[in-house]
Image 1 (cartoon, helix red, strand yellow):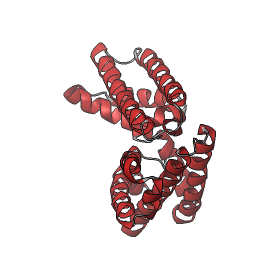
Image 2: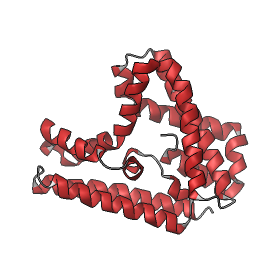
Image 3: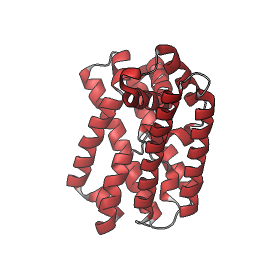
Image 4: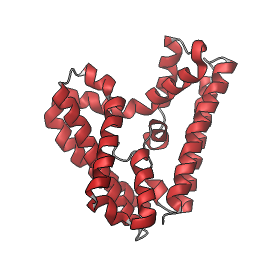
Length: 232
């Protein structure tokens, strides 16, 4: 995704004192954000980089393309919030930024590589949730079959609802309190559906741990929503 929570947090803090234009025009701020995002994307996409056997140069280029798209989209959206732009327009801005980013990635990755990238990208929320759950469980982590089944039901949920678990910020957080509330309600409903389905193959302790992971992720989204709501 092109709108990372790390970008949004830094940009929102800057917006509070200097306005959205500073994000786009301050070379130091842009460079700091770019470097931070490149490190984040390299970590997030490392399994895919290895799977595609990308060279060090192409791996760096991948992270650069993504970080630049994030900064551009973030700056544009933060500026749009000052005019109370509808969430539908904000979502279109994100989609346009993703399309522009994809047009740069396709020639570099090739058709097969790009297809793998899109699959990996859509499955990130499931991967991040399973990873966070196993970290929470420690030596009682899920077995391979449980990991696969949990990932399957997570991938079946709408991406717009689950992507917060992979550190991506929904456009709703740049809208009204009603927009934010509706999104968080959808996330909570999705979490409950997942718990209901996971109860058939997770033990009580594992299920409780999953609920904690979901709760932590939702709490982080709520905090992000409150932070951004104060800026517009």
